[in-house]
Structures are given as structure tokens and as C-alpha cells.
Image: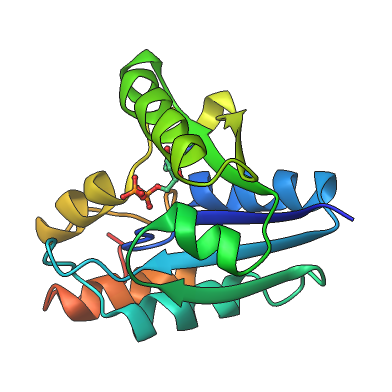
Length: 165
Ligand code: ADP
């Protein structure tokens, strides 16, 4: 039975992430989506808030669970018995960093391999930072994230709108 982990910041989760989650959940027996608790970044949402949003948007996916982790991904993956790390590739610009990370992780934990899923074309442009940026200026983010996420992004950004004109 293959167990996979999809790590990321998910600050916030977007339709691009959800696309990767659904496709990975179809391929692997068990998928754990794990929020990186990284003290070096100053995220918009706390780890708990990101975990809770992921739980809500993944609630209908029976073989998906949500966790968070700190420290080295490769060690966490090995300690928790994951076989595969899932990462999404949007563009060639993602590739160099992702290749370096995958090779480093494999060097640290030889039992763990990285599998890349390429983005669906409709989400190729989409990133959490774009969502945060558009919301900061009061733009409509409902095409980028589920409604429950959009509400929380606007609330966090102190913007009184539901993205409707
Ligand atoms: P990180 O800070 O680890 O890059 P992100 O939350 O930005 O975390 O992304 C987590 C993973 O999801 C990464 O592998 C990233 O390439 C992938 N990803 C992000 N946005 C998209 C998208 N629109 N389509 C496909 N994959 C994506």
C-alpha cells in the first residue's frame, strides 16, 4: 500500500492545490496533506487556520487526512512511514528548485521518493501569493479559492467585501 505526503505552505489553499490533492488521492491509497510550520516565513494564516481550511475543503475525500509538521520534510516523511512526497509543477521556473529539493530529500532519506504532478493548465498561473496580493487590493479571488477560503482571506486582509462588485 503506497502512502503519500503532499507538503506545502498552503497560505491559503487554492484551486491549484486542490487539483493536485484530488489527483494524488486517486493515485495513492492514502494521502496526507501536511502544512509546513516554518518560523522563517511570516504567513497570512496560522498553521491551525491553514490546517482547518484544508480539512474543510477536503472533507469529502475519504483517503485524505491533514496534518502539520516542523523541521526536515525528509525526516518527517521517513519517521511517519511515507513512501512518496508529492509536489506540483506549474512551470519550468518551479523545476530547478523542486529538482534540488527532491534530490536533497532522497539523499537524506533513501526510502522516500518525490513524485511530481504537473498542474492542470487552468491553474498554471495560480499561487497563494497571487491570491493574497489580489485580495489585499480588494480584487475578486473567487475564481482562485473556494468561497470559505475567500471569506477568511478577506477577513484577514481587513477587507469588507465578498469579492462581488
Ligand atoms: P511551498 O511554500 O512549499 O512552495 P505552496 O503551498 O506554495 O508551498 O505549494 C505547495 C505545492 O503545491 C508545491 O509543490 C507547488 O509547486 C504546488 N502548487 C502550488 N500552486 C499550484 C498550482 N496552481 N498548480 C499545481 N501545483 C501547485
